[in-house]
Image 1: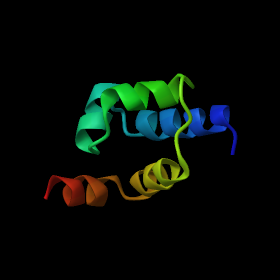
Image 2: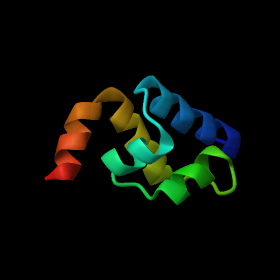
Image 3: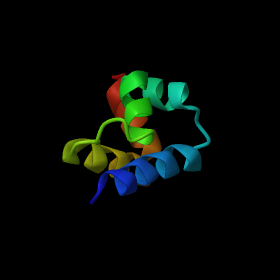
Image 4: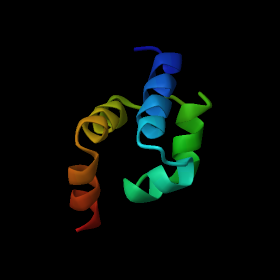
Length: 69
């Protein structure tokens, strides 16, 4: 998956939840700067981050609860 596809996947996941970058980052324990860089393709989200975002897309409440504990 190329950098642009990764950025779109992350933006789509965040948008589907109706969260700002700041709120998404806070809820799922991701640095807001890192999230911005990934979405704006200033850096490439690593494979583990893509996997994490895919899990968030499928089970956002479960992930939010797990990382809040």
